[in-house]
Image (cartoon, rainbow, N blue to C red; front, side, top):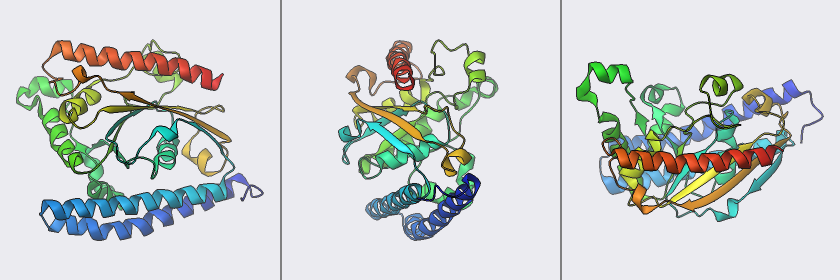
Length: 296
């Protein structure tokens, strides 16, 4: 523990360890990723993906090691014992800080399938980690705005097709498909601007959830509902690196996904759309009350 050092120095050390750890494991990850890119055989690619996941889990384990070295954070986690390595999960969480991702990776690592996020298509070009995301089968999505679709109606449904194509890769091994359904990090300004009906959450967007349930309804049968709370207030990533986050609370609940929400066309079935939105809103009301208790 390096708590005797000034916080900025701890932050520099933690950032350096994170960068070196990422570079090391990414270099190792490139070997199976490039093999996967070159060899089109499906079975070989599946084995490469498993090797890539092992490398990624090792990266997370080393991240946990430098966190323990540089920080004195108290982790109050409830429900992690419900997770299983062989599950197919839809994971939803509230979103307040970039720390959320590091926290979930630490708690999920080697307890559940590796977390996979939907990413914007242009992020594949991010140096070092863009290829790593591709090797991990992170879905890269090209979203079209409402205005664009009005001008190009032929593009309607392309996002659902892309989701289905991305999710096909998830059928070969257990997966945790992660979605921040608020669409952005919570701030009081965004809360007021969106006229949110919740006390501590932004309104959830059901489209991504609906598309995943359409594409993988026959595989994913469990919702993992994560509530993350920071009693001191949502920290910046720099605050986290500096060891200024004294407590992180996380509540994990596993819930069966109702059969009537799976395998139906979210884009064209209005009744199904309403059912998904109502189901998600009910979970969000419960999450809002839980978050209030966790912070109270």
